[in-house]
Length: 168
Image 1: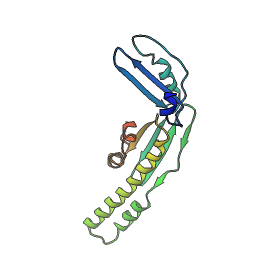
Image 2: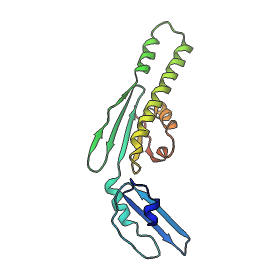
Image 3: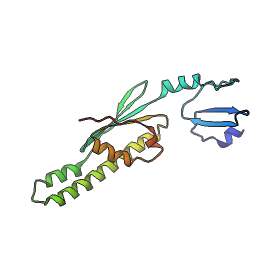
Image 4: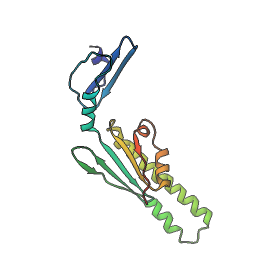
């Protein structure tokens, strides 16, 4: 009854690690079902839990440049590519730069458009990661765009970033 009263309805599994001697009580809700088991010993039995996550972990890969974001979900069962995000405003600023704008104005416009684009990309990534609490996130691309998107991703999603490889 204690668990039913304190566990979210969307929870598919629960892990409880407890030790009176070590003053440990750890309860973790999981998005995946786990086999029912109990073990008594001097250390927790984590192998069954590791096996569950080995089969269910997913990775969301965001390939970023100044004009596009390509989003790819990879898990043990399939690879799914989401609709990419494109920056119309960045392209418009680039086209305007060919006009008679002064350099300072053009740089401000490009920075504003990059801010809008990276904010939109971070919002879409956060939305996709919200439903994937066990997923890892990889942000790949140019250092400038990856840094801009990364700073706009709040915890707990930022804590799921596994890698940020540079791509040219």
